[in-house]
Length: 114
Image 1 (cartoon, rainbow, N blue to C red):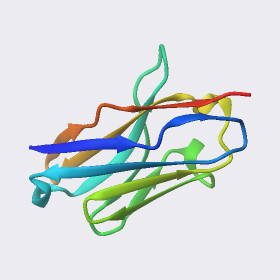
Image 2 (tube, rainbow, N blue to C red; image 1 turned 45 degrees about the vertical axis):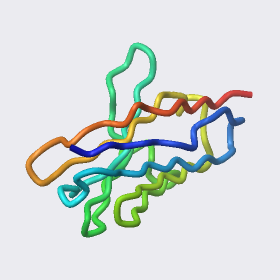
Image 3 (cartoon, helix red, strand yellow; image 1 turned 135 degrees about the vertical axis):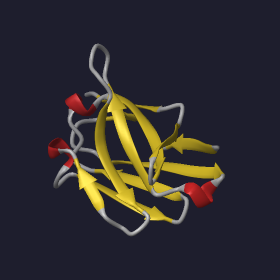
Image 4 (tube, rainbow, N blue to C red; image 1 turned 90 degrees about the vertical axis):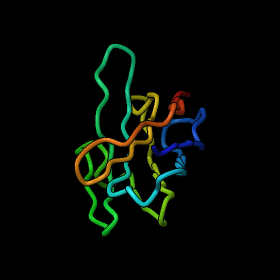
């Protein structure tokens, strides 16, 4: 089992930045991909970005050019710049091993509002 703890959410104005952090503990030798998903009310959870243990990244179209994912061993960071009101959501950290899902964090609220 892997435990994931997120931090860094909050309330910001449009155009501002936030950095989310997720630290994994437990059976971390199983980790392959770590990433961030988000879910807004009434919408399905969607991928924001993820990164493999080898450094390969994948971004959602809405995240390209504004968000940057990075990883240091068992910690994954999401730098979010030029935030928009439509980025408002609960952001969840996710971890996968090579064959499937390892777990989810509890989520951190990001609210972008003037």
